[in-house]
Length: 107
Image (tube, rainbow, N blue to C red; front, side, top):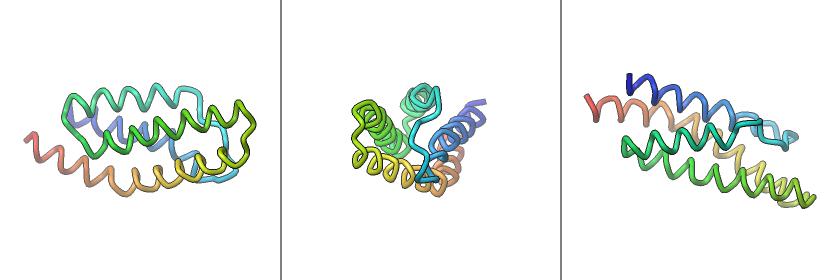
């Protein structure tokens, strides 16, 4: 059950971050912070520090993007979209490795 929950969190986080693979996409999906927050809570409980570091960076980038959208700061919007795009690529690359390590560490 715990492994399934981890995989679900990996998939959900990738889903909300993957929209930033398109640099024209500026607005985070509704519920992005909730998805990231639930994943942070879960990975904190299971002690997955690598995932937590990436999720912390995503939380900050989404917050800064929303602030830049609100203030109309075009440069900051582009920077945060770029950061979130990189985070989504890193998450896609690292998530399978982290999931495998967690499955074997708790087996």
